Image 1 (cartoon, rainbow, N blue to C red):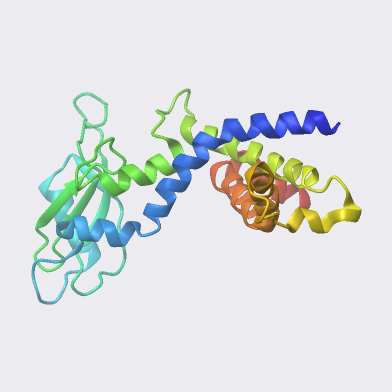
Image 2 (cartoon, rainbow, N blue to C red):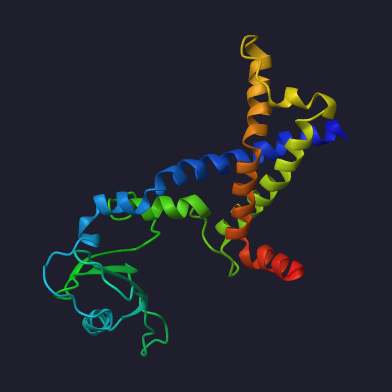
Length: 240
């Protein structure tokens, strides 16, 4: 039994290692997503004009009137003083072809005073330009930019599966960390003075035990965010 779990723990760890490395590295950066994005792209966040701002609906109407190919899909209902008015846009359907217009952008920043366009970008594009760097890292964080297929967001689904494996592996690791419940204190200790293999082993086992709760929270919430419809909601409905 223990030998089987050791092998599972090893292979599960190797499977999720690459995903956790990418997700952890990008997650550390996107923790300051808005601040870095605003520093890199002031034209998308800072208003150029001073004065009373127009209403959000008026600004959206001006944008749609200037470019009939698009419609505003999302907009804030309040504009902070000194900030640009950022909206998300979707393509309209071309009545001549019955297909959606092709747009090379899906976000637009407007001057809240004049309504003039200050900048635009395609959020989520595979690009390392100043405009797209933070959205690129954000999408890489949860989907690896894997294209959708079969009507499914494959990248998000894959990360959800990785999160399930991570959750299962967390419980396997906890069981393996306490081979003898009578000597449970050893699973929290570090043999600093002995060094070498023993210290490396303790850093892995005891270090994991000390932060086990945090790791489990990260794993479970990853399942919740990536597989909300497939897993989380059915479980909530089952126990509610």
